[in-house]
Image (cartoon, rainbow, N blue to C red):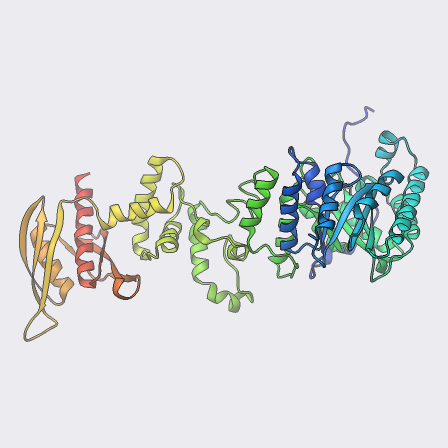
Length: 561
Ligand code: KIV
Ligand code: ZN
């Protein structure tokens, strides 16, 4: 039989696996590898000044373990370690971490970089997969074991020679997911023994990388659960995850492996890192946050974090990136917009209905918690719905379009955006509202309306309406039960359109002396059609009169076309 080019990876035998029925309830520890795995994969790696700004950003977010480079591999990284330590840039609660291969001269150089550090993690790695051992390093398992153990002893010795520093140890069997689990266990046990000073208070970190995502997330979880169950000194080690995203499942792999018992996660902001990147910590952390888990990291100003990372890495964040992408919380489609609008207006009921303060259709998390304002939530194009358009006017301009008027506004917005063939801005939506409903084109113009209460019965109104019709001034007598009814009687006669007004909706915009009334008036026609007009004035009766004239102009325009 011909050898296949690819084949399915075999899962380990774990019939009594526990992770599928577990729920994550507490946060793991987090380690940012942005300045090492992330930086080494940038087309233009950051300069020292940029790295320092990035480091300070990570500290501000709350990372307490930060891998800042590979000091034996590059002078820049070495100098950066020295800069952080000598210029006291490291917060007291933070460990800086440096990567090294298991080679004596590189380990020695790493410790030179760490000189004087208060809290550091030396991170040694060795390839443990047969693929790497055989093809890249021409080593066998014994060679690998020997090299890892000797290197660990050297690290222990050098760490002991720096008694003023709290130096911890992390060991990574590279390509853990492509490594024979039994061999990996043997290797990690031997390294643990060689380190010889791990304790529950100062645990050693065993980092199990899915260096290349060769397996589905459930295989990774199985391997981690098996490893945790079989490692003999579980309370003296932190089991750490380090997944890359080659098959696009790094977040899933991380979450399942946490269920499987891991305690710590390494990754980068927005998933920078080799090839398709490391696991995106912004996504993993905020997934946990959205389930009510306290993560210890602060992404309440995610926009600033995203802007800083984009600027320093020179790499843009994709529009649809979870949480941070421009469209992460944006609804374009009408049905989604409508649902969001309804959900947002009923937030006061979610506690009672669902036992949580936030449950909104199409928004699994409150964008405000990430510092995102609502103005970009609903974006308007020709597919947008009435609810979404109303939402935009309400959020941006405080204008509350009555439900019955929303379809008419939508029709106008749709005609405009069809014509424009693009997304339109909130400003344009407002301009459509203003042009089509508040100030539609003549023929009718209200010059003045003076309503006066009857001397005997003040509820009855006498008055005069001055109008311009096609530019010609006309005066009509306004008599009726109330100012609006009197105005309607006068105008109906004068313009020759049969309509009535049964009710209308009013709203105050602004406060105090500057307050304006907005009147939304539905004009009911003989054929039962309804046309809305909107008027604005400091006096509510005048606002309603203006709205009626605006509605009549809309009717005249429709009759024309
Ligand atoms: O992806 C990987 O395996 C690594 C190791 C050095 C931990 O980055
Ligand atoms: Zn990596």
